Image (tube, rainbow, N blue to C red):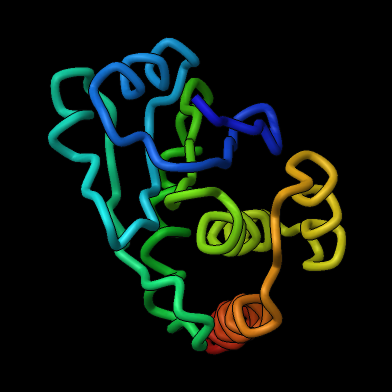
Amino acid sequence: MDITWVTERIGLGGGIWNSKNMEEVARSGVTHVVNMQLEFDDRPLAEPLGIHVMWNPTDDDFLPKSVDMLKRGVDFALEALEDPEARIYVHCAAGVHRAPMMTLAILCALDWQIEEAMALVETRRPVVDFADVYVESVRQFVASRIESKSKP
């Protein structure tokens, strides 16, 4: 399996695709999956193994992504990370565009600055290609979180 551990508890990579690979994901300690693939739903593969999957189907079309789509994945990840034993695998088909975008949003929600988070992800997984439009989508998401926190 193509898992790059960005932090001790957040992994990033490509598609799982079959039960053998899902078993490998489980053996690596993953308890939660954020699946950004439009192409394939992992939930039936994960269910027998007790892995929680959030399917957040997203097209890799280099168009802006919604704050709501990013919020769904981030909320799922943050809730999972409340359990100190949880480990998250964020993936798309190849682990190059969509999953790095979501990983970036999760890291920013964990109080990382966007530039430092991008550097960490790119250092750990050199194949990552942060498309400008996706980074801007994460910036919009971060701005929306800051705005919602400042409201009484």
